[in-house]
Every structure is written in C-alpha cells, then in structure tokens.
Length: 388
Image (cartoon, rainbow, N blue to C red):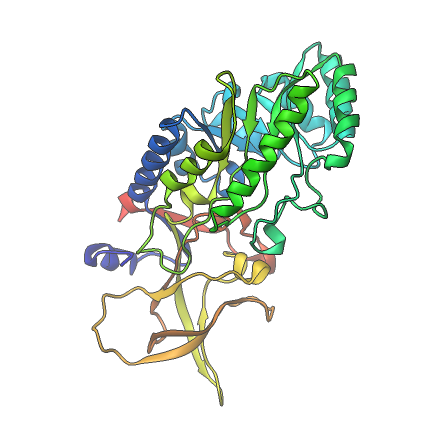
C-alpha cells in the first residue's frame, strides 16, 4: 500500500495532479546500492536525466554518489547541487561547443566521447582554454539489451558510441590530440534491463576491447560500463528495491580488470523509479457499449512514458477500501486532446467515482523530468512523504 491511513486523509485536501516522493524509500535504496557497490570498490554516478528534482539530488549527493550528465545544463545542475566536478561525467551524442567549454572550465572528471569528430572538437576547445580534457571513448559493443527498441543503445544501428570498425582510426586520432587524455572506455547498452545475462555479455565485450587497447600500448584506467538495471513496474510493493547485490556481483565475476583500473556505473532509474508516484483525481467516469473510462486530471503531459513507450505502470485507487469490493476494467485516460493520452487499458480497479484519487506507481524516473506544458498545462507539483 502506498499510503497509510493518516497520509491518505492528508492528501485528500491537496490539489492534484502531483508527484509524490517517498524519501524514506529513496534513502533505503541509496544505502543498499552504495553498500553493494562499495563491496567491490565500484564507483556509481547518478544519471540526472532520470530525475533532477532538488530534494532527490540532495539525498543522492549526500550519500557520496557522483553524477552522470547528458547536457550542459545537467552538468551545471550537478555542480549547483554539490556534486564535486571530479565526480561528474558528461555523456551525450550531441554536445555543443558551449556545453563543452562550460564543462572544461569546471574541470569535470571525464567526457564520454561518442565520435572521432567529437574528440577532435574537444581537443580544439581544450587547446583554446589551455587545458587538457580527460575523455573516455564510448564504444558501441553491439550487445542486444533485450528491452524496448527506443531505449536500446548498444546495437550497431543505434546512434550512440564509436562503432568498432572505427576504433583503429580513433586510437590514432587520440594519439595526435595533445589536449585530450584518454582516461578510459565507456559502454552503455540500454535501459530497463531485467535479464542479468545481458550484463554478462557486456562484460565479454568490455574485456575484448580493453585488451585490444592495452595490446596496442594504451593504458586504460577507467572502465565505465554504463547502467541500465531495470525495476519491477509490475509489482512495486513486492520489489521496491532492485537486487543491487546480484547486479554488481555479475561485473565482479565476469569483468576482467587490473588493480589500477576503476569500474564506474551510471544508474538512474534503479535508484529513484520506485520512490515516485503520480497522484491524480478522477474527473469523470464514462461508459460505452464495451468500454468503461476513468478520465483523470493528469495526462501524458505529466507522465509521458505510456504514450511514448507504451510503458506499463501499476495503477491503483488511493483508498484502504474493503476486500471484496466490486471491480471494473477501465481504460484510464487523461484530459489531453490526443488519443495516445492513455495510462492503461482494461485496468481492473474498484468501481470508481468522480473525486477518487488514483496513484500511478513507479514514476520516479522519467516522469517529472519529461513533463510538458502541452495544452498550456500547469507546471507539475510535487509532495514529499515528510510533508504528509
């Protein structure tokens, strides 16, 4: 159950829709992730693209995690939130000159470089500033993440990373770039990966390309294996915290590394997805010949994932209720003038009425940060467990 009876009473008086964040669960998740990573001396960077809510960032930074950023504004947000520049990585396939200059001035830990041309641009801009840029070369390992095709990033046809066919040329260019220092190699195969065998396959590829560089006299100090660990969208209460122990153990067992080599991860969804829920109110109920609808005051403008990825989120009525209540299968939809504005079809719920509160679970990742003002919607609000 998402709320206790006291909290349930308190939220009845709040304006909806809003994101509810369980900071208690967040801190427990962070503690378990940190302990599991520390067991092997692994370094974890939090992926800001998953959620950059200020209170969440404060909690994550306080636990000693680094930051993984994919835009200049995310780099600046991480700095402003207290993440040391020495723990910030800057990834992304399309970094602008302005963004690169800003990150160079901050002296961040490393740029995850995704093309030979990007390497050359960073070298030129670093020379202008009189600095040496630390970079990690992102290699496209051609590993199938077995996940949604929109969030698969490690196949040959994906736009990310340097294809293996260009690595010989990349190594030559790096040697010629006086203002670039190769720190390590970077890999990322996708998101919401629940089959840990995918990470075994990734380790094999990382080992292969690490050895390839070392055989050619290049020292590799950092192996950044990305993130992608999935969460349980189907049963959030049964599995509120991912099995970080099993996840990190895979890399400890199958990833070959020397004593001087650090292993880095970029986790986002796995750390914060379960701590967030979208709370909405039923505006109207509708029934057709074959369909029953719940029309909510939240829509795809507040949570884009179902419309964009056809993603599943558990939907439940916020009420202690009585066992044995009659149920109906509802299409749970929002108010936006788009047919794709639907959170779930044929969702079994207790018979509901106007004014009932609905919770859409596991929305802490890629929820608030993807919200939009389409249809001139109000900006999304948020509430924390300590406020109820």
